[in-house]
Image (tube, rainbow, N blue to C red):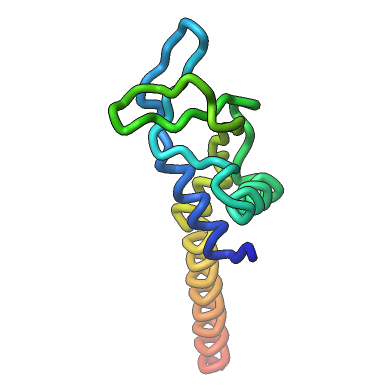
Length: 128
């Protein structure tokens, strides 16, 4: 079952991806900390949910997936096909919790406005 915790964890894992090596010949990307849809059905569903919410977009589709051997060499046959995703501005905002800052700033501004209006009202009422 896909939970909000799994969705946010998947998003954070996507943020840790990086291209370690790039071979122009053959357009080969070696990606560290890659998140693959083939890991589990839940990861695939979490990726789709992130895409639906506009947090990620497909960067390279499809891409051959190889699991590097313990000696650092590539096997001859790919272990599958996957899509490489990148985070959008909205995805980065979710990771950095920007929305929480905006909401808390709005609450403080609204409270300040109410306090100012109340102070002006009490000052004017007390002056007459």
